[in-house]
Amino acid sequence: MLENNTVEKSDQYIEIVANENKMYCLPDSSKVWMHAGSSIRFQEKFMQDRKVWLTGNSLFEVRKHANSRFRVYVENAFIDVKGTCFLVKPHPQLIYN
Image 1: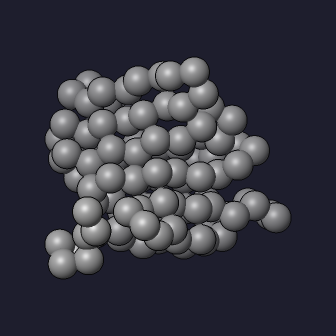
Image 2 (image 1 turned 135 degrees about the vertical axis):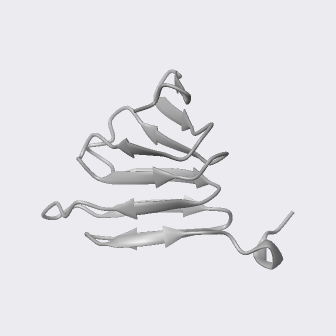
């Protein structure tokens, strides 16, 4: 699924860069439909702390896990969910430099 995309592992983070529109399945079985040019980053210990840093546009389908929140960080904000489907698309007028 990630043939034309970049997957990089650093000391504690995994970063996925979508070179084309692709779906990526996170370790908790949540799905991210990434638009071309988007990227996500998450910790290797994702199952202990479900946090994702997003750049660009992506549709998330979050799996519900008892007593575990899922947080997506975008720009200067974050989205907290327990299990749902939502699209994150930054608005150009709201991007801070």
